Image (cartoon, rainbow, N blue to C red; front, side, top):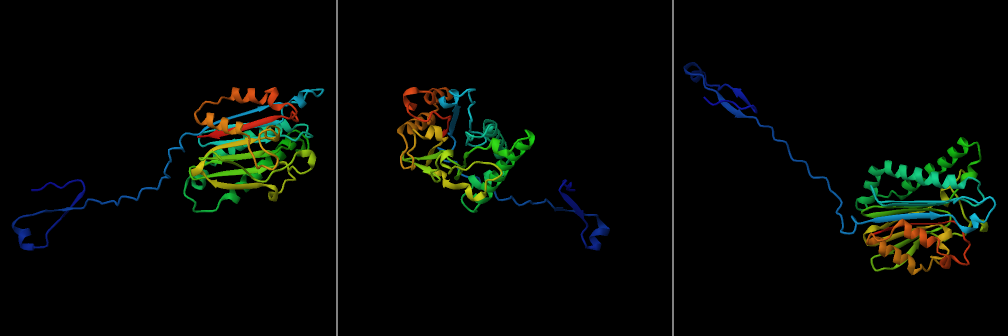
Length: 301
């Protein structure tokens, strides 16, 4: 007699005569067949997409050190490569007493926000272009940054205007790169052919009354943002206005070759934060400039 397996059940034949002479059992195979689910599409990684390197540095300007008492650096910057390449530069308003705190807080808090949004960023930036998300992402960042300024004011019993700062941000995906700009400074993009261009409209300094800052008076209409196809991009450079005054033309039409050199070295993992620090303090480069605080954040592959 056949022994049933664990995936079988026993049934009796319907012929009564056979049942009187001898009990015969038939084994019926009831193995459960589970259809194999279709594999989840995974974005294809280009050879370039896995080799991002990033570095950032901020230094106090000589004009701030000449004051009595000396002012701290009101710039803040960050560069990350995990879980994805992210660059942030904030430049505190010179007339805002606590803008160095505002700039540093905004850099730290936005990094946390983007880290917590990694699931959404994978869908929006890594997958092929199949949805429009730019406005939603820009609005999230805008609201979060404004509320950070409001919270700082309430915590320190001051007006949030005492903490206001500009904001430059870039987030890299396998398919697209998202960028956002509030106020002055420059975002520079480099493509595989070595050409460079700026993102967003040029904006003048605070004293021209044309720069906007992140505070509770900021409206979403003043936020510049967008995306670019990541497949052809090899480098990104974010600069506060103190650094961009010698590296990017006022109208954004030209970018100094020094930026391309930095990105080329960084792509080979051959550019350190110390080298950026020394460049930002190089007297010959900045002679005759405004000697404002200077920040540079770079990513390259």
